[in-house]
Length: 122
Image 1: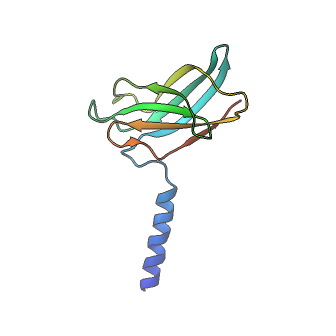
Image 2: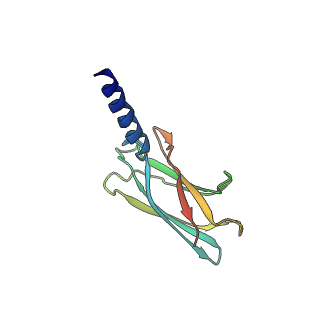
Image 3: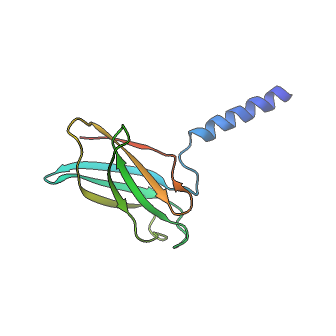
């Protein structure tokens, strides 16, 4: 009987480990990029259980795959009644050699989410 319980726990741990960020952390649910005259414009859709000024998604960032920060969008207020929500950032300089970027997001309580959203550039 004991080995079955261990197997069930291992299976549950594996499944939960594959899920996106926990309910309290910000989740990136989508992103797009388009090249413009002044660089790139990124639009990122976040989902977070914002509760007000004490706990809300307050930032998303665009990185190169090597970890260089390319741009960031600071979110200046909670989005309690607007979930999920999308915000854009224009004028981001992306090296011509890149065909992919990594997007990370943060909330005011948990900090940067462990989720990394990889976005292929068109």
